[in-house]
Amino acid sequence: MASLPFTDQPATGGTQPAAPSSPMSPGDEARPGTPGTGENVCPACGGSGHVDGRPCPNCEGTGRVTVGIGGA
Ligand SMILES: [Zn+2]
Image 1 (cartoon, protein in one colour):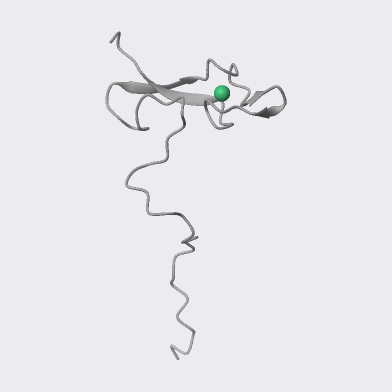
Image 2: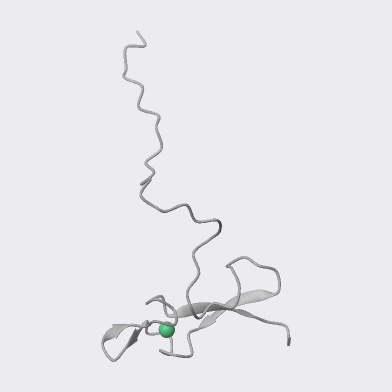
C-alpha cells in the first residue's frame, strides 16, 4: 500500500512579482482589510469597472475601491 504519488503540492501560480503587500488599485486609499477602511463603489466608473469601454484605471476594472470610512 501507500504507493500513491505524493501530490500534496499547492496549486500556486508562482508568477507574481515579489509584492510586499496586497495589490492595490490606483483608486484605493488603503489596503483591503485595513482597519477604518471599507470597500466602496468606484466613483470613476460607478462600479461598472469600465470607462469608455476600457477597464477603469481607477479601480483596475474591479468596480470597487478601498476607501477610508468613519468620517476622516
Ligand atoms: Zn472604476
